[in-house]
Length: 506
Image 1 (cartoon, helix red, strand yellow):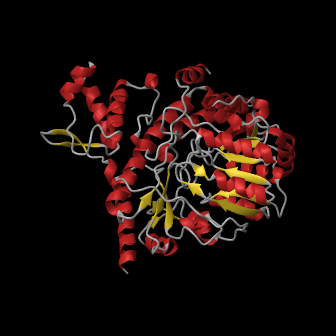
Image 2 (tube, one colour):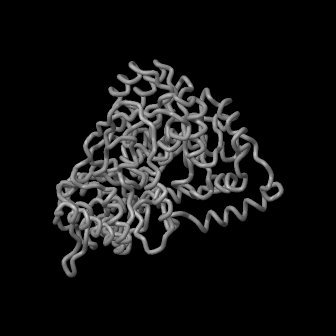
Image 3 (cartoon, rainbow, N blue to C red):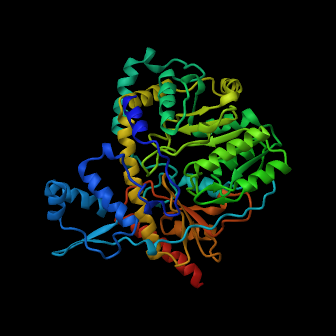
């Protein structure tokens, strides 16, 4: 707990909102006090590049000057420049030195604010989703549709070691049924981490689930009945639409901004005119847009749900994959009524296969427990206690720092490659965290057709049409960068850009 308290005391400011979040001084991978010296040097140069102090083509100080000014070794200076090279911010020219190759002017524009038809709909699209899952582990495919980091970005060996250690300590090797609420050790660790976003939950407030999907399922079942209407962002994660369909719910999609999230004025209008049983949002790093709802908006949406007594299900599955100094807050942190059901998971940060998620259901705790008892009785003790031990030993935060660093570097690589190789009118989101990009192409492009052509070339992405119930986003696609960057990945993006250009020429 000591490292968490220190982090809170030293970092009380929330992440500021920005159209180009990379381009502000708030975007640092680590808190200053926890950085290595080379990271501090690199971070300061990075900030100057994002703020335009250092411009495209500018020459950087020599390694010797960096050594003298910062009182470090040549090796440390090299490490700083190597880390900036890895993000495609600078490059070296033989016998000349290091130069800036990143330009604000070359970044694509952000996607336009969405404008769905605000009428209730039912979901029916499944074919492409099934196709995507069939291609998850196919060798020889460049897969931009991944919904979680690849194994190379995860602490697989350390997790396995922790699991072996944990099984030896568990009663009967973990073969017993766990209590309905889940592991007390794990719930306590999750509760402690809520301090990072201003929460004050206790282990008794949290229920462990089989991943985020079960947490969302239980939450929807707890607050709705078949035939009810719920409100979501648009575009919205297709898994949410599938759940709504299975539960017989009608869905209203609301306009959503790629920076600030759901349009709250549109929300107010809908709740005033229709009977809404629940609102479901991904407040931090929306899937697929990447938006982060500002604190003021989070406070406002909590105010709205309290006024109209509407439960708010908050999916915060990627809340800890942030690129700035601090973890973004949650709607739950402003909730005094118990109407916010806060949902999360370790699937995007540690292991999707472990199937460990949670929900802090507020006033709906008894109903969640009743539903879980009926549907699954208990969760798997071994994976719960393994993750709890991983957190207790401090391995989780070390891993997260590395993961955030890699993913932010990947995001820059992707965006700059898209800018250089996709049509000029391409728009791309610029997320503050997570690992997903929303790409908006010329309206002439049909990404369902593009999907088939790209698949024949060994490239898979996620078409935008599956993130909605309506006839929209056919010219959009989602790209995942939760993968090790390589020349092969860059080549795949370039190939995809060429296919899009060919479509425009036909």
